[in-house]
Amino acid sequence: LFLYFPSKEDLFKAVVRENVVAPVTQGAAEVAQFQGSTSALIEWMMLQWWRRYGATKASGISKLVMSEASNFPDLADFFRTEVIMPAHALVRSALQRGIDRGEFRSVNVELTLHSVMSPLLFLVMWKHSMGPCCPSHEQIDPEAFISQHAQLLARGLSQP
Image 1 (spheres, one colour):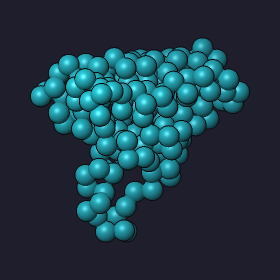
Image 2 (cartoon, helix red, strand yellow):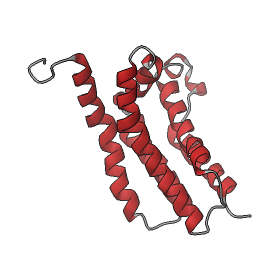
Image 3 (tube, rainbow, N blue to C red):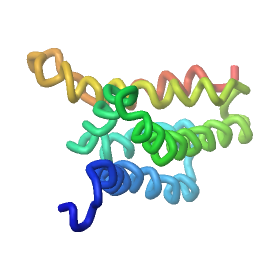
């Protein structure tokens, strides 16, 4: 393994680039071609994020980074630069698209992007912490949760 990666940190970065950065990059190209409403775009983006990353074992990387960021600040900064910033840019552009088209009212896009991202992070944290410990009747259907949240968000953003 160390023939290909000189350190554990380099191995971690390669895993992140392959499993976390790649889905964001793929999504960016698809977002640019999306023809529907911005509400539909945001729901689609959230569901695609879940299907390509959140539903995979690789989503444990997010929990790991969040819990260990203070112990490994260089890797946390790498994750912020390679993953969080591009994801935020993608969501920011979708929200701005809705404002520019008159579909959404004018809002603070920087704060609103967290309303899109937070439920996704919640699902990943739940999946890798409490989820496996809960009985089946307390489980969360991620795609139903995402769709409902996206619809609530769209209603809150829509023009009065």
